[in-house]
Image (cartoon, rainbow, N blue to C red):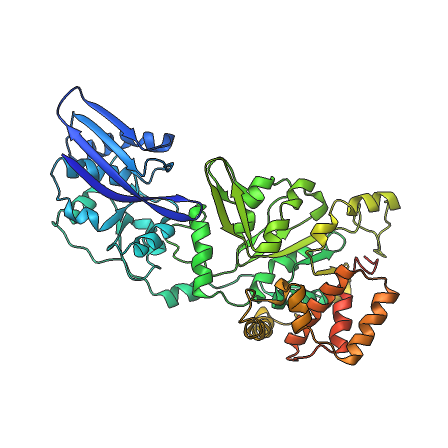
Length: 510
């Protein structure tokens, strides 16, 4: 008999429907064959399925079994096809009816005793089931909370294969798994780190507030131990709270990558990714023989922190150009091309010189001018061109470290940042951008209106500091964000003055 079970495979960050067709015939010698571009993990499922069916008391048919995974031109990978293939064999043996199989997508890995193990990429599968108008998804119990964030479909989390057989056979009834989205968003949006933990560095804190408010990329330059990493880790806590759509898209990427904890439904905190400087270009932007999201996509709607920026390989840093410019990254391979979202804020940190103490009054720098120049030239001009703010982060003196004053809490700073972002959303409602950091030349001309005093100040700064045209546009964008934090429609001279301070490298200072 022939049975047909619906399943799905994930390619990129999207799920594609797969029909698992099982044909069993008693003619010929016993044989189990699988077609439809299965990878090694899918082919190995035959042994897991045989053991699982035997251990739950089902006599595995000693007949010719052919399993087809359609469409046949789409590569199938992973262990998620164990459950639909096993159910297809049982349905082909007429143990359960075939009608319910047309309403549900089945995914899950089987253990040898018939238990269903969790898999990755469940959220895209649930989204695809809703898009196709199916009734629901049957999946491992540990993945139920993740899939239940998709409303409008039924999610059934199962412990083992016998439960699935009883449910599809109409022997037992189950209630679909339901979660409270508001509670899930609230419980998942708590940050452990707070800006009040950082002593001193008020100038750097202000610069990070501006960067968060306008989605500006930022570079921090300072000696070892000055607090650059500590500051960077707290930036997600001052970014605006994630919307449900943002949380869903971010969770989708982490689900495909297998980074969600068992039982976790939503990722409602801003991602903070900090790859080591030995990272490869494929690990950073994504790819591989079977394309996977890279660090830039895992940082989507959050922060990508590159510590010790000059220590990264030159070719690795250069691949950041496209995602920084476009907000997505396209990975092209021989068989297909995959596009991953990559809308993140780049936060980088570096020492001013190889020894780290150039310009530090408390330590003697041992580097020659040529060594310093060679060290800084490891970061290319085109990459610096995409960083709006670069600031000096000096060592914190003992007096400030021992001070009881804690500074503002992240919650207070986040309130100001959120208000500034709301002003930008209203301003750019007719444009395809949402923050000042994404403005192009036409947006700068339209929205960066300077007062007469601001014009005079910027003119004097351009001439006296010999600022480049690149610095000019960056100063205007940052000035626009500072004005938004100030609640001003026009850009005044004090806004421009503060923005000029955030161009350390253009001013020739460290």
